[in-house]
Length: 192
Image (cartoon, rainbow, N blue to C red; front, side, top):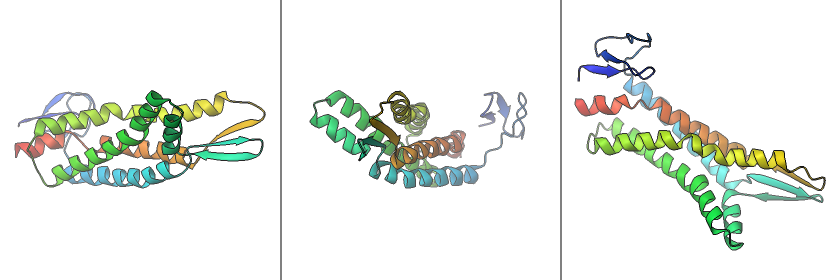
């Protein structure tokens, strides 16, 4: 492959060029640096995934009675109350999708590290799905923020818990991990 796409402006440049002809960005591929950064961010995301699911995402104080609710606890409570669609959406968006993103990113990093080219199209598709779903993972955090801002009863207080902060950090680190993994590396490895 003689051409290399600029990750910033999308211009096609000669592989021998170090700088993009359109925007001036350094376009050289740093395979090891990209893998190391992506893996470090992903490990940080895994570390925050655990408290995001173990600690309360919301703490409700009503008449000096403090109750905490984890993501799974909220899903179970909604399911028990018959709110099946909401419970399913929260389970998929808050538990299943982040876990799948982590697994897919580990898979992509591992296959690049081992220089495996089989199913190249599938790997590119997985990478783009990770990129598309990334920002949508913050919906849960926005819901918590909206609940805190909207509910101002004198006898009820809703406070974001440790789980909400951990969840936001987990989403942030998965986004950084996917952005650090340069998709051009897949094409570079499979060409050789």
